[in-house]
Amino acid sequence: MFTVWQILVGFLLIVLIILFVFRISIVKEVVFLPENYRELLTDYVKFYHQLNEEGRQRFEKRVEHFLSAVKITGVNAIVEDIDRLLIASGAIIPVFAISDWQYINLHEVLVYPGAFNEDFDQAGSDRPIAGMVGGGAMQNVMIITKWQLRQGFINNHDAHNTAIHEFVHLIDKMDGTLDGVPEIILERKYTSQWKNMMDTTIGQMKTDGSDIDMYGATNPTEFFAVISEYFFEQPDLLNANHPGLYEMLERIYKTGG
Ligand SMILES: [Zn+2]
Image (cartoon, rainbow, N blue to C red; front, side, top):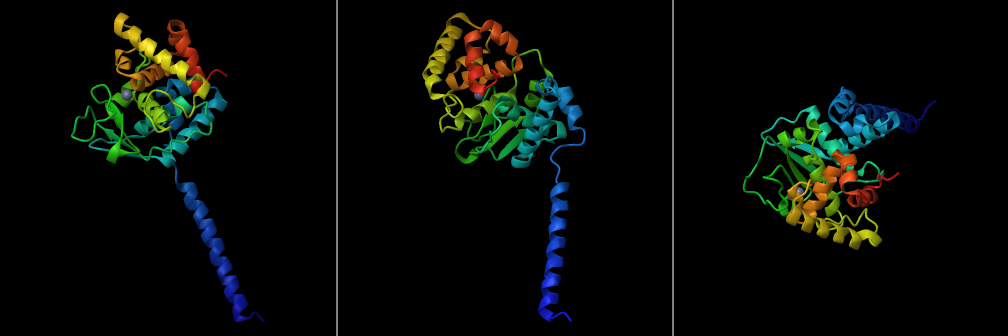
């Protein structure tokens, strides 16, 4: 005969097994990618489209992980599947070659419909405010406008991508300073060379003009974000026009192979 004790233990075991199985099924049901994510990425994200099958699978995993870690909230804007995928793509493209990268300094992305100029802290705002990375009370928050987000991916013939621009600011900021030098990924022996290169190019831009967006001449922080957009949007053109900058960016983003 079973004792009361044995029956209780048996009952507890059954409950635990049920809980375990149930939890597993809940975890599996949380899906961060829309059903047609492969189609959407192929159609709208050139970077993804150009990867081989193995690369695409890695990209998808990184996108899914990003979407599971960062909240995306519409502010007077409806956030659609494509917007979530584009934000995650903008996050992953710059750090795709750095497999252990985590945006530990980002908890939420706020999506605004168009240009915004409300009375929040505008430190770090960009190009009549297409996006910004927060400071002060907005720490760990990024703001991006839906229109600029989509334009950045739809138009493949320029060197602009607002999402990439804002995520590059976050990468730059990870070492504690927003200064155009991403010390967390750039080896120390190259930092002074990179600073000089940025200063020299900004000087040239101001005197001679440039094919680089003049917004980059604002300061080294903006230069780094702008030249990174160019690097990921038009790599061949950047390599042809500015081989030195191209080489340094390959070093920063570990894309040299
Ligand atoms: Zn910027």
